[in-house]
Image 1 (cartoon, rainbow, N blue to C red):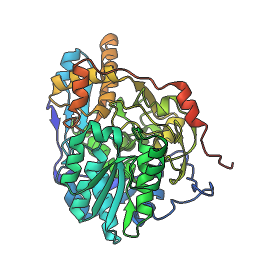
Image 2: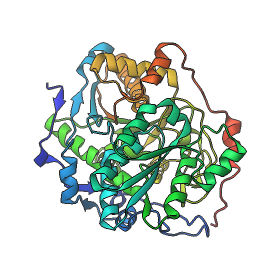
Image 3: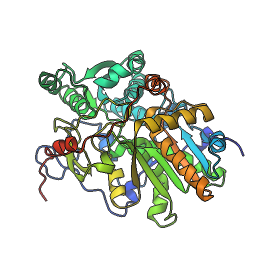
Length: 451
């Protein structure tokens, strides 16, 4: 069979799919960070159109034609059959991967960044402020802002700012202003630096800085690259394409595997499929979300109410969390270092439709190198976590003789992450499991929410 299944531009989806229309139980309402009562997102965080999408229960939401034309710069993206990897593993499993690394920004993040910049521009916004972990989101938003003539300010988690200088340079090339977080540019940043001048930062801290920045200026809005409902909505174009491509090959996945940090890339792939599991059409399909042992949000965190950021400026949501004050170690998990998780993913895990696993750094990079040498694509460290589980599951099929169709969400390439590969190849990379007592310490600061 063909190793690459492609769609034409005419076959590209023209609507996003909204899982909220098909959930067996509605999402719990978010809560105001001040009153702690159920609420809609308080302004001035997002563009109004995004706020409407956040709470919409319409099954399909039209993709504006101007956005469709921009999407065509890289969409539809290819779906590959990993024949060389299958041969290397000597497995009867069929492995397919949906590859988002062909986007100009190198990852799936562009699917929502251009949408957010589009809606912000339509509402008269001049500037977007955001955070970024490993830099994929910052790169994508910088590009989205360039397309629509918006200024872009990026608070980049300090450890990644120094680990991945080329990500910063890419953002600056697209016109963004990038600072390491915590920074001297915000009150929360200055406070954290005064308490810990050597702070390596976290996504929770960077989110607080970006929220404070956007909230302090009338010309600015905040932009978020993962976690929230409208971001997951925009990413469903990926899963819808994958579904059409697999139909061309007369294949339906027995298993879908992807990495989770905030959850947007994996949700974008599996949400169009999970409705078949919810409806009972495909009850035995496995959906496996993979996270790092160094930031085991879903596998070790409680399902409870927590702030989305360190400063308690973002809404309170019901999710799996390690505590909003959690500061992860400076490992190479890149964008998988957020203390919480997308409420939609948490909801589906809690209801039993999605399962979560955690893997260590060294076996993750071992799998990434094996994938690269077989398929010719160097994966970003984030989806490499999912590749580890895909390889493990394919080897189980080898032992049992069972043939399974496995779909991998390959969210981006690792061309800017070669420093992490150098650490692995030189034997300097170390496994890290976050200490239980550190998690317990962070969880002491969870907000008290009225019943």
